[in-house]
Amino acid sequence: MSRPYCTRCARPLSHCLCPLIPHLPSRTRVLILQHPSEVSHALNTARLAALGLTNGELRVGERFPELEAEMADGAWHDCLLFPGEQATLVGSQAPERPLRLIVPDGTWRKASKILHCNPFLAALPRVTLPPGLQSRYRLRRAPMAGALSTLEAIVGALNLLEGPGRFDQLLAPFEALIEGQIAAMGEEVYRRNHLETKR
Image (cartoon, rainbow, N blue to C red; front, side, top):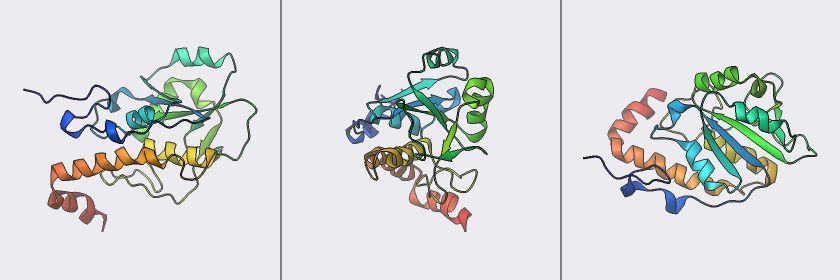
């Protein structure tokens, strides 16, 4: 018999994160485009980000033709939060229209596939976070130095755009999620598989 799950945070009811998820307003619209392979992942930080932001939205898929049509009205200044040669630092520009931050969610390969399947997204101006940031994501090996989880990247971007520390509350359910996973695997297994391999 399967365990009952929370329909909101998708965690087992015994480990529901909803009491820790804030309800934070932001001037910036955050649109997360999640690859389908991430939906059922135990460490789904994109869902936590979307739930914690009143001006956040999560869409799942590989292709988003409806988004291209939405962009035609020009209501938003759309930027892609994703590294690239022409990427500028988040907050270095002051757009005249309200800012919508579009965030691909998935492994590096899956996020890149979303951009490949949606050329209009790949053509958007890109913004990135400053170098040297350290991830708290202790359960996944970063594909490169400075790589962050989707939620951490969103928190970093919004803090730069709207004020230092304003969105740190989003990290509370994230930390609880990680601690819960470590507790489930056992401290010894965690140390052997995630700490000793980093030495």
